[in-house]
Amino acid sequence: MGTISKHEKGAAHPFHSSQLRYAAAYVLITSAVLLVLNIYAPIMIRNLTYASQSHAMLDKAQLLVSAFSNSDRLDGETVREVIQSVDDLHTARVVITDVGAHCVYDSLNTNAAGIRLVLYPEVASALEGNDAVYIRYEPGLLISKAAMPIVAYNRIIGAVYLLERDSDQAALIASLQTTIFWISIGMEILVIIFSVVFATVYSRRMGELFVSVRKLHGGDYSARLPERGHDELARLGTAFNRLAARLDQSEGVRKQFVSNASHELKTPLASIKLLTDSILQNNMDPATMREFVADVGDEADRLTRLSAKLLELTRLDSQPAEDRELVQVRGVADRVLRMLTPVARKQEIRLALDCPEGIVVLATADDLYQVLFNLVENGIKYNVKDGSVMIRSELVSDSVIISVEDTGMGIPDSEKPHIFERFYRVDKARSRKAGGAGLGLSIVSDMVTRNEGSITVTDRKGGGTCFRLSFPFYPMPEEELT
Ligand code: ADP
Image (cartoon, rainbow, N blue to C red; front, side, top):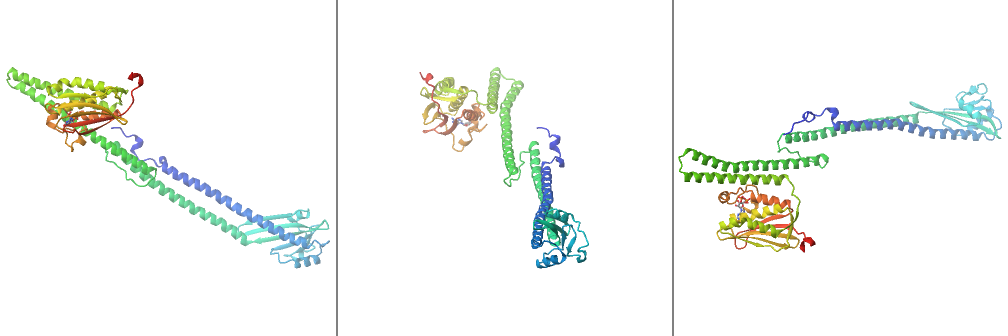
């Protein structure tokens, strides 16, 4: 069991929480965008208003200037007539000056005519021949000034000066600015609420994940996460649950294996203890003692076989298949039968082989030997007197089929799905008597699988059992055929 690091133990410091950082980043970015909007939008609105107001003021000045186009001189009388002839200009003030900047007409101060000099910069610019316009916005008021030269017969004879104070447009600009400001504040509040809610939900779900990981780390394989949603965290949760279920299952298998193995080891050890105690306590005659010692030897043999099988299983679990090569089925089957002939003869069982030359499978030769050995050995062990065991191989479409058939007692249908499980025995008494521990077929199944084959078990026609191995077909290389 591993140790939990300092980082995993406590809750994350708020500043080390990625979701809080994301939330802060959202708030900062949106604040910056809204700030720029609040600065830039009013400037744009003002510029647009200034542009349209400049045009309007110059148009009005132009209207007045055109009305003077036929006058060669500006005196009070002519100016008043012209101004009356022009429709209402909607301006706060109209000033007409002569070429020397003397006031000829002032709509606000009729007494100023002839006495006062008009020294506005717009008028000075107009008397130099330029159109001048000046717009200024102050809260509640838009002030517009425009001046234009009055030209008659190609000569500047004076200037027109207009002043306008517009509170309606100023109110419009102010209200637009205020609206943008409050919309920005509203949006920012929404962003903050959304970020806080998002960060809270996210951190709660991450917290659940951490708690479950910690439980798993502590050996609690029942830890599971609620499966909801379809986002990345939900998928992470599903992957975690699958991993936990898998660990749970392997832990169960491991515990079962250890308990079965201990049980299997305990039985012969208990027999050895019983036998040795009897030898030590009783005054036995030498013949009985020899019998007891022989029994101790048998139990020791059983222990040796059992530990060899356990080692084989561990090896199969931890090591991949060694280099595989094309192996002649007939050669391997021949060796297996030769090796088991003495055992078969002792039990009056006939062994037979029906394997044409040239049928090969891609496998580790030792694995194939071990598989056939276990199956034939079982065929002998669970057979009847005068029975037989036969190894057959054939090519069926794209597969090599190797079958091991016996004329024995057979396996009930209800037991067939379990016989490849570790420590599973059908006929417990007979298996134990024959020195079996229910491991042979699980070793066979593991070996077949790691050589890309499959194994099935069926009843043999006429009684007995038939194990069928299927391997992918590989043609024999030509040089080996000759
Ligand atoms: P064991 O070491 O006990 O033989 P196996 O894994 O080889 O274990 O076999 C599992 C069980 O399947 C055996 O206990 C036996 O009851 C049954 N079995 C295996 N092969 C045969 C067979 N050819 N005929 C009948 N029963 C068999």
